[in-house]
Image 1 (cartoon, rainbow, N blue to C red):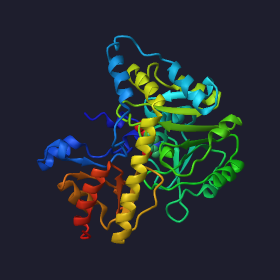
Image 2: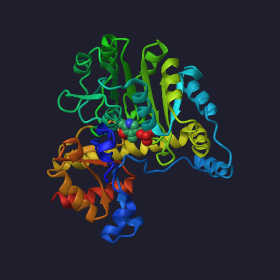
Image 3: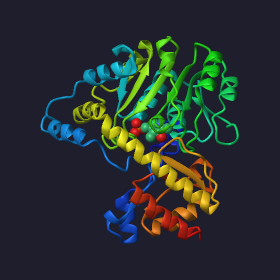
Image 4: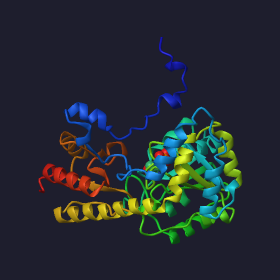
Length: 366
Ligand SMILES: *Cc1c(COP(=O)(O)O)cnc(C)c1O
């Protein structure tokens, strides 16, 4: 007998998050060695984690018989110092993904509304529907830029959360400080504004949203160690928010949500700013490599503030398959309703060169 009739319908109707295609699976399918495959599909750091973080994690592995510090005291103290806020303004999760889910647990119930811009990270919609809330996607300005005025206009008394990814994924666009300030002036106190800044490290322009937290606004700033710090596989993300919201997140999480290995790793990674800056520079110069090639080929792309670039290639799924056959994994965008586009995560210079060779052949440009 199927148990599905007894499951929550709003859960069985969900579409599961679809990650990038794994290297091992691709290698098996096309008969190449995993080392020959270039994966530029999941916005991962192509350089790798800080060697100091790796060493700290190796040392921590010897002590995994002991439960981790459930309060993540050392990390939160370090975050508080870095962002100029109090310890009580911080929370950490198993990736910022967990913090996104915990925000939904804290604020979404049946009938509650959650707003985000078109082409946002699909997790916002998943966690909203998981709690039987209403997810509302708001059209962009000029197709690609988050329309903060429109988002503010869509707020109703039922709105609980507004997610603003800045810079955005999978588009790579960004909104600036003046627009954010104007938006915050319109948002009522009853709404929690979540600034998901997973890619801010790669932006040329910096914005300050922590200032709203310092001013006591109901804002939650999300940062991750998955992208610029290269710790995606170890899972840790941070929230800088009001003491009330941090407390709610800490109540909603499981007791040992951030394991002891990554706690040791991230402390070392936060001290290794040299490695961090090196990784950011690799991305910035890689971005130029793609932009130059696309300009030369006459391929439309969205100027990127992130570690990936969205390009218009005709049929994204066909280009994805053709590149896959050559051992280059890109990310098709059908799931976002962007069938003509492909998203390419920036790799090392050698990976980008290989990707551009393959893509050039597939597109008949090189
Ligand atoms: C990658 C990404 C994150 C980070 O996710 P983690 O769970 O911290 O790995 C968060 N938000 C967006 C929009 C992202 O693309």
